[in-house]
Length: 475
Image (cartoon, rainbow, N blue to C red; front, top):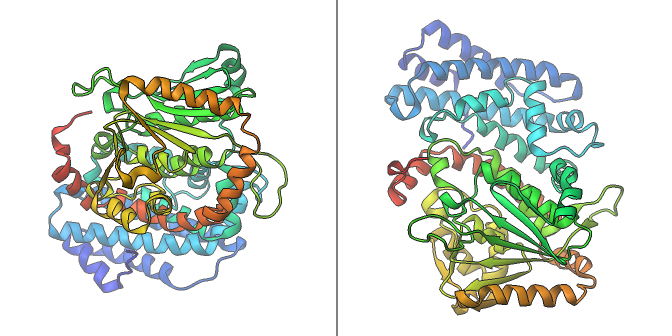
């Protein structure tokens, strides 16, 4: 995956693609010099970053001289691949060597809880070229996904290396469990009004129950960059509300002709935005380190804690599956505590047909279905009807559509009125055996890098065009 090219091979590819021999020779000489082994220290960080950043900026400028990726001829494709591979190999090694001094500077020597997006933007500003800036990725987002060379690969490799260090990775994951600033600012308003419309998400408080609704009707409540922020704020508000004891996740009615007026839980990631290049790689990290992990673990509390202990503000969650829970929707079922489904509904993880990793389902699904069925679902696209025996380990109750609202209300009333004594303590104890924070950190070592390569792969575009007729769909 991280292929190193020898100097002669690099120069040959670049010249055959049409670059001036002197330009190719100069870039290869600089690349070769940086390829020599070196030790990384705090003292060498800035000097090394300056040299690497300069080389990467030159490489991206050369890539911009080539035609868009999908329209390159064979020599041009070879040259583009050579430049991208060379940068990725150098950058990954640089991140590995310098991850600790880099993170110390970005987090104030672990004193500050820095969200992953803030961390990446700060790193790009401090060490230009070593990581992509907001402006650079905004420019790349104007391209179709098939025409991106992959600036976002830097982000995936960097986060993977951060998570490979236990103290850094666990601190980063803990930082992502902090409440969002918007939730803190709007908590009093939510408590006073009992409901907030956040755009692509709604949140309501009814007695001791908090309801979070997915509201993306044009896309069957699919998830994307536009839904992620509002959803996390809504989840934060339920967790922060002093009188709410139980959270409920449910989809709002959609306007798709086939399901018009019906509630749908979630269609997973927004493949239309993805195909058109408008879906960021950062979405995957923010989603699974942030809102999904908050549903599973709650909100981090400030102050010291025992080594390995989780002392979070957490509450149990109910998911209500109307219609279907596809992809990311299915992933949410793996982190809630109870699932009520509509008769005839189904859940699936169509990652095989999309070409991406289905979030943290690879880590969690086997705990419910067993390893064999989990592989069949993830690798071969098996769907599960909620009434089936195979689905019974994930679905707690199934009711006809006409009776679903009453079933949800009855369960919420029973659960809240029971007092939910020691719920948080028991959730923490269950995670010790199933998924301690350090296990999730180790998962992200693999996930952060592999998902970046999947997100930018040509095979993803081929899959979307073959299985989803993506070329026929417009934003």
